[in-house]
Image (tube, rainbow, N blue to C red; front, top):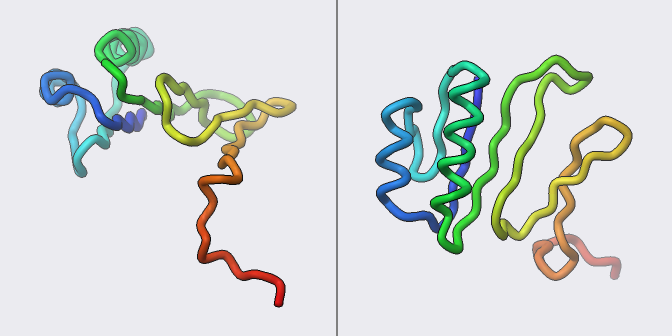
Length: 102
């Protein structure tokens, strides 16, 4: 199973991806494809970003059961730390609605 999330990409890329995956929400694609097709779809997405961004989550045989790929500028960083995938949100993008210490 793969999940591919696209941000600010050409409409044509989204149309091409719907040949292989379903798009339950704009820019979010889900499906089950072989590793070869998954890699080719990823390459196609990366070549077609044109200033956009892509994030792919796919199942694999590791401790977490998935792996991540990231291309372009998403505003978040994906970090692998001792075999675990973590998401880092820059301080200037964190919500201002977080509770403050009063």
